[in-house]
Image 1 (cartoon, rainbow, N blue to C red):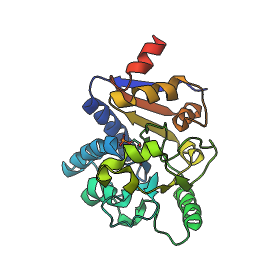
Image 2 (spheres, protein in one colour):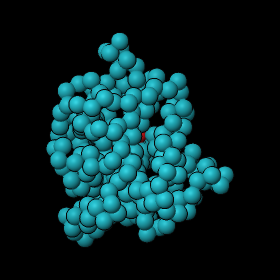
Image 3 (cartoon, rainbow, N blue to C red):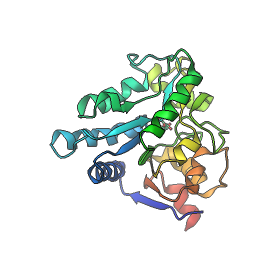
Length: 250
Ligand code: F6R
């Protein structure tokens, strides 16, 4: 197992700043960075900071390629609840990343298996992912890798856990039944292939699952525990998200 770099910040905002700084450094370090991106409430804050940097003239996305982790099956890119739409709204429309290099799995592809294979091939053709941004769900998922997900799983169609449909129901009128039951997601194996992983979690609601992922058994029933197998992982937590984890290791 590899030593994990765990950063605990005093506030959520500092956690977002810390993550945004790592992405900014990656973009400045390489002329052609390949970023793996995530969606959700946590990430909105990080994208807000990146957009601010870009608007201040301090961050150039012209050489950047990105691959998002996941998308709901059945939602068109124009659907306000799709992750395509989320990414446009929070990042792509506000920065100068070439549109043809901003990739999100296509949830309305006529053949989803073909789409998953195409997505894996596109990541490969881009030279692999340099930095993969990750959140963690209540089920311990990274991307939409619900338990159990094999550590060598690749981009595929998954059934969303009821817990996740509830977690994500805010965008769907608080009705878990309206959250699409299936999604396309990069696999745990796809994620582990990235050269660097950065997982961000804030808030008390994440404390138990963060502790489970970092201190519990490395197990396919907690997808996020797989990141401990990676040799370049940074975990950024605010004190609330780190509260259970700190107790156990003290
Ligand atoms: C979404 C994704 C998910 C989220 C996770 C946390 O693209 O990868 O794993 O990161 O569900 O979501 P929030 O930030 O909304 O708590």
